[in-house]
Image (cartoon, rainbow over all chains, first blue to last red):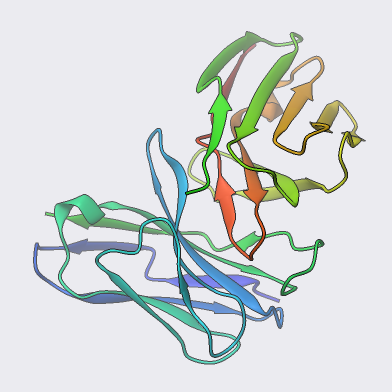
Length: 115
Length: 110
């Protein structure tokens, strides 16, 4: 099993460009999450999907959109990239909806630079 | 909104010394999880605490969840160079969201 797979691993964008970060998990998990990690800020939740067909905003959703394409895939889209979106983006999945035994499994991350 | 604060931000210890990081939430948590992230890597799940006052051990690591379920700590006894990394707590509120602390970066000096 691959676990959580993110693509691409690295990306450089110019201000105003758009792109989609892809995430897929093969663990049959219900919940999926997108976090961004900035120095000194920890991991901040952008959007999450508690189950297939639902998405909700996290702490820092502005400038992003998401799509839960099916149970396996959860994509993050930047419509018009800004330098403030330079960050490392992590996708994560979790096995249960509403349960207590729900560790997060992270992908390897996407390092995005916006110039 | 929910906030999870973590201290200290950085900690340098000599190999063999102990290390502790503390996590505090502004609201009551349904559970708390701890993760370790090696430099250049992704967070890896260590443990989850659910009950008020719960204490769990993993070899040299001791995790505690406060009585009010608003704070937690991770203590490492006799640190080793393999303990290097950033340790994060993540609190879960009433929904499916996990709020991460800012992390404590541990450097172990051989």
